Each structure stands twice: as C-alpha cells, then as structure tokens.
Image 1 (tube, rainbow, N blue to C red):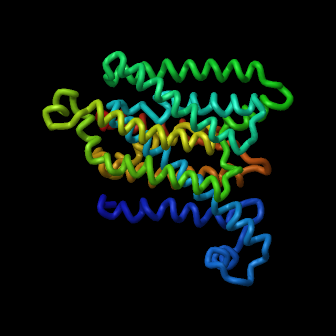
Image 2: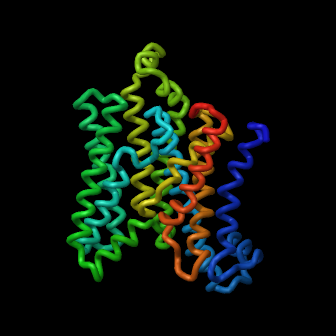
Image 3: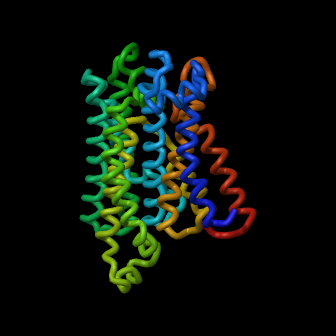
Length: 331
C-alpha cells in the first residue's frame, strides 16, 4: 500500500473499532439497535439503548483516547531520547500515578477521587525528574537516569503501601487497579480525557514538526536555531499530561507506548510529523480492540494490562526479530 493511501485506513481503524465494539459483548446487539440508538431514533428497548449509549460507547471512546495518549507519548519520548526502547513510562509517571492511586485506596478516599490522586502524583513524579535533571545539566542521559530513579522510588513506596494494606479488602482493590481496566469509564471520564486531549495531544501535534531536530546532536539543534532543552521540556510536559491522564483512568497498561510507534514508523516512515499522528491513531484502534477482547473472551473480564502484555511481548519480539533479519538499524 502506498503511503498516501495509508492515512484513510489509519483514520478508519479506530472509528471501525469503536463502532464494532458497540455490537459485541455479553449481550450482543443488532445493527438496527446500534444505528437507531446512535441516531436517537425510536424503536429501541430502553435497556439496549442504555447499554449502548451509557456503557459501551463511552468505554470504547475512553479506550481509544487512552490508547492514543500512550502511543503518542511513547512516540514522542522515543524521539526526544533518541532511544527506540523508551516508552511512556520512562520518566516515572506511571509509577507515580500507581502510588497515588494506591495511597488513595489505602486512605479510604472515595473512588471518584482516586483518579485525581493518580493524576497528581504522576505529574509530581515527572516534576521531580525534571527538577533533578535541570540541577545536573538537563541532558538526555540525566533525564533517563532521573526517570529510572524516581520511578524506582515510587515503586518502592507502592510496595510499602501494598504491605500495609488490608489483605482482605484494600489490597485486592489496589491489585485490581494496577492490572488495568476501563470497566468504570463513563461519559464524565470521557469528558475529562477529551480536555486532556485538547491540551496534551494538541501540544504534541503542534510540536511534532520540530521533534526531528531533537534526533540530531545537541549542537546541531542549536545551530538550526532550536533550543533543544526548552523544546524537550515542553514535549515532556505534554507527554506526561497524556500518560498521567491515561494511567489515572485505566491503570497500568504497558506495551502500547512501546510497540505502536515502531509499527507506525514501518507504515509512514521516520518523520515525526507523520509518526506522532499515526501512532495516536493506531494506539487508539489497538487498545479499543484489546478492550473489546478483555470483556468478551471470558465470562469475567480479563485485566487490560495483562492482555496487553500477552499480546505485546510476542508482537515486539516479532518486530525485533524482523529488524534483525533485515540487518538494519532502528529508524
């Protein structure tokens, strides 16, 4: 397929995934019921309309937004750190968000505030990373090391909370949240995710033209008139906003931010002006499909983080072995 013909397919992928997810589930729906519900026409049983519009549609849209966030942030981070093995968790935002959610559950804070705690501590983790990195020069290596250290610190705090939690009540809730799920996604959550989309995803899309400069040496970027440190900071802030929102809503979901950018590069090339939007579209479609599978494969819902790991590891191994067979370098 020629690259100019890929974009319609990329746009159609998440749209089709969301539409198909309205039909499939424990209670299958017919085409007429779905279409008439979406068009607000009569002739649909109230229960079916409520299931389609109140449960399945917001959940599918939430999955698409979360998948797009993780994939877009992963592509951006791989670009600014010049490392194909980097994903959206590199700066400790996921570990910080996990600690925030676990702390809220341990303190008995209402469920509707757990997401706020996760979001706040995710941002706090990256703030600490940027603060430490700026103190010691702000280079790419310092950022990565700072992210690993801060992420490890919050992971240790998370382990402490799990140790202190009631094993009969709080600990199962923490474990379930960490495994990842979109089962509680409703229209209010979609509204908050959409606000983040306008801010974080919009910033990444506006900055995507300059990300190619960050793949060059620092001195070459300066010679082209780009303040690499400032640009990197803005990209990190935008990506962190997306990842924190995704983790606070869906829990710990890995591999989307690592694998999807590689698949996008294979389709549209290495130019970040194309990789960022392609990664977002592919991530949105992939996670919507995986969420559909998570609630349809078994009688009880399969945790989304588990399913992404089961699918993601073989997919990454396939991409890696294909790369080795071709004998080429990562683009």
